Length: 45
Image (cartoon, rainbow, N blue to C red; front, side, top):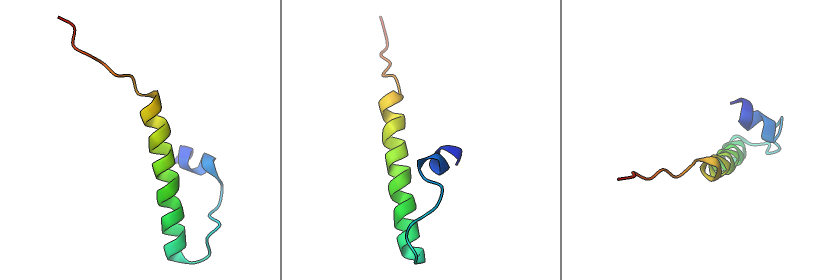
């Protein structure tokens, strides 16, 4: 949750549905950054 808050402190959408959509976009961006930093491991031998 701390990393989600670091993207922006407050939601800019005024209605609840807009806030939900905005939060889902933030989580998708965060998951994309996490996927970029995850190493790909392969079994040797």
